[in-house]
Image 1 (cartoon, rainbow, N blue to C red):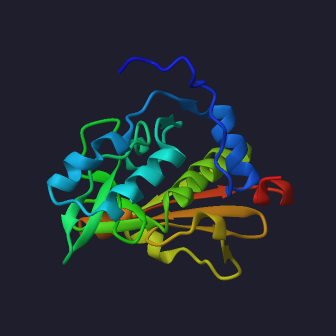
Image 2 (image 1 turned 90 degrees about the vertical axis):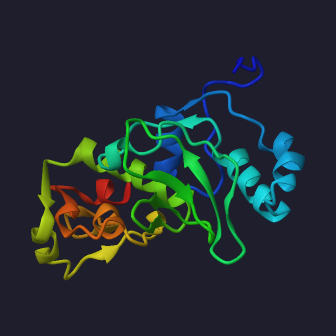
Length: 221
């Protein structure tokens, strides 16, 4: 795809993100040329895709299309570039569309589901965050916590279920569904259940505990 000289490679963070996520997108992201979903409208309609689903994919593309962000600490880094494609599904099962191509060969893809959730299409559809904003917020939080934590502890498998989250509160901006973040008095905990749920594989549970954080770091400034 030929680059559009009118499109700056320096992204402007979409409205509605936390200040932490805005800084993350604008300091670490790169905007690359992306396809215009709307030019496929008539062809997709001809293949039975509802107009409302095409509009939903186009809205995602307007907000996130062409944005390349640093890799996530799990899911083999997440989508390489956020980028929508033709919706697929049915009136019975609902419609989904791709959220972006994988960075490496994977047993699942990243999708935006019928209700707008960002998730993985593994053995079963598994929504991770309520929307793509939540995914980006989680990337920003992992980058922020990893940068400032005095210790980072990775826990896997059944040991994740033994985590004591008493006294912790959920981090609301990540809009966690299967995956969640928790804030304590001096630590942040990310709990990644997506692969465990998606493949019915408890051994894939994983948690990252970021310790030694002060009040500023806990809330991202």
